[in-house]
Length: 64
Image (cartoon, rainbow, N blue to C red):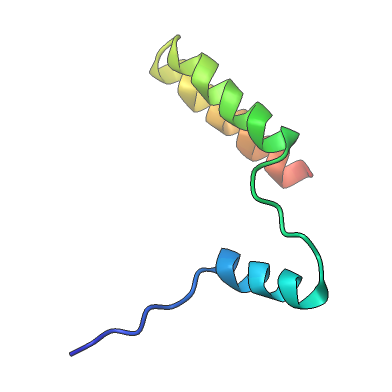
């Protein structure tokens, strides 16, 4: 029994961008870097800090 591999949304969107002649992004933006950086810094301070950083990232995402 073989399973069909479903293309990821990233591959689908990249293909659509290519069809339209638009360069698809290949890496994250500053907002993603900031969110990742908050978690990395919080990692040095323990679990409570990580959870707080994750919560503030979620709050930022919801309010955006």
